[in-house]
Length: 215
Image 1 (cartoon, rainbow, N blue to C red):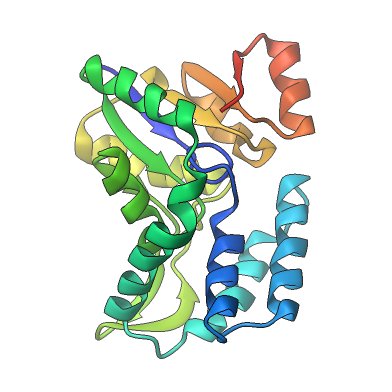
Image 2 (cartoon, rainbow, N blue to C red):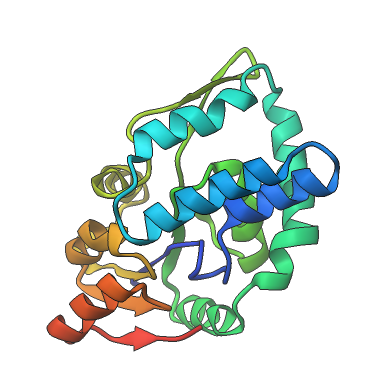
């Protein structure tokens, strides 16, 4: 039995879920085009690997302070059904099914929150979610992230926690990702697979002979 780890945005899902979240709020009159532009700028920085992830997370999460955790979870279920589901990558379904048929353990490993990632995991039938946790006190979000973020080296730290609890060796895992920012985890696993890569990751994949797939 092996282990298959999947990034979410632009891998299992063809779009960035943060952009879809902002669009869903704007459609309900809860967001503005300024919010959309700000997230687009952050996504652009993320794509080229120059984003200050802790600073962006702190600014992005401030607006959630005082929100009930259950309300955010319910909102993200609707987000998935109306906005994320149409962007599920068809070849992602085949990849997940192939690993299931082999009896592999599966996990989504994403910089997004678990509230966004869990409905995606449930749709694919993926048991585990490794994500950027948000601080919760008495069932209410504080507007602060829990360190480390599931980003860069933080993805290795958080995925190793899952590996210890689930009883697998990260070095024997397969990891699918689109982003140069995931290079630390791609280098940590035995079977890196590059999916829909950004330009910097494509250069690395070509230089190292890593498989490249378009989903």
